[in-house]
Length: 276
Image (cartoon, rainbow, N blue to C red):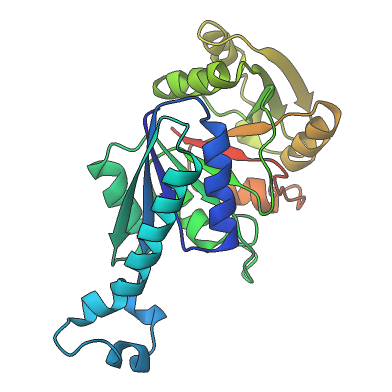
């Protein structure tokens, strides 16, 4: 991984995710793109009218955030001057996910790191609205950092599989994460009660994965997915949890429970979300 996207709205949660990213990649040569996206709907008419008559509304709306973005990237350069990091500010005036998608394509982004934040809508409370939309609509691996989570050395990574097939194209990324932190991989194979999809035999998939990655396998059966993961994380502490998203309803099942269980999952540790 060389190119990392750090979306920010200058909030405490966004800054917490950026700080986590700095520790996560310590000792690596990384180019960070720090992205701020602004919409005119976030500004009042009076704020727009205070700008210079010679300037466009577009310029007026972005002026303050451009200054904040420059200040943030400069402070990161100073604070992490001993690292081989480079920082590039990106400012966009667009729909949030459209701006992120454009940045991913234009700058060959390998990973997006975002913080979670509280929200009033139940479907957004775990990740935050912007983070959830990025997971759903942007075809790029996302690392979400829980609110107030502080980086701790990563010695164990959990990969939970509930019938999903790990994509071959993403094996190098997971290998790199494991190598970077000298971490071991634990695979949790879940067969959830009453979920027809998860009754499929995952042996061939796991054998295929074993040829590419060394891991310790754990199997659970007839336990709701969220409950199985929570119990595992309590019994076998891990510092990073990896999940595979094959289709949109997977997130709904994980966050709000399956048709047979309403137990929901809220990750206490950073979550690496990989798309098939």
